[in-house]
Image (tube, rainbow over all chains, first blue to last red; front, side, top):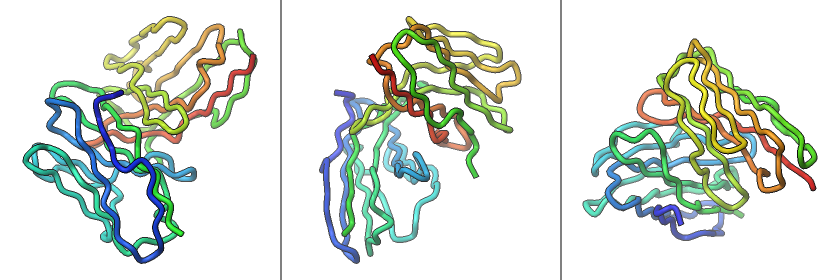
Length: 112
Length: 109
C-alpha cells in the first residue's frame, strides 16, 4: 500500500457519459498530480493541485476538469467521454521538499 | 514531443544476464528519477539522481546521471525474474514530472 488511494479501481462506461475519479493523497502530502497512461502515449501529465489550488496544467482536455478539496482529496471529472479516453488514470502525491512522487494503483477506465 | 527518450523499448533476457537501459534528452534536468511499474500498479520510485556524474547503487541496480545532466542509465547485474517490469525515467519540467515511455523488461528463468 503506497498510501495514495484511488477509487474506483475499474470503471466501464458508455460514450458521451461523465465519470468522476477520486484520489486521497498520502497523509501530509499537499501536492496532487493526475496522469493518464495509454499504450501509445505513455504517462502523460494532466494537472497538478497544491493545497487546494491549481498549480500546473499539462495535456488536459477541456472536457476534463479536476479539483482538490480542503481535506486534500482530489477528484478528476471526465465528461463527454470518447472511446479514446479509455486508459489508466493515476493520481500521485508528493511531500514538499521531496523529489519523489508516490502513485496510487490507478483507475482503469474503459469507454464502450 | 517526448522530452525523455528511453531505449530499448523492449528487452527480453534470461535470468543471470546483465542489461543497461538508457534515458536521453536534449534538455538539462535538475534531477532525474527512475521508477518501476508492474502490471496493474502505479509506478514506484527507485532512485533520484541529482548531481551530474552521480552514480547510485541499489543492490544489483546501478543508476548513473550524465555529466551534463541530460541523460541517465540503469544497469542491472545478474537479472532475476523479479526484475520484470516497466522501467520509467522522469525529469521535472515546469511544475511536474515528465516521463519517458519506458523500457519493458522481461526476465525469464
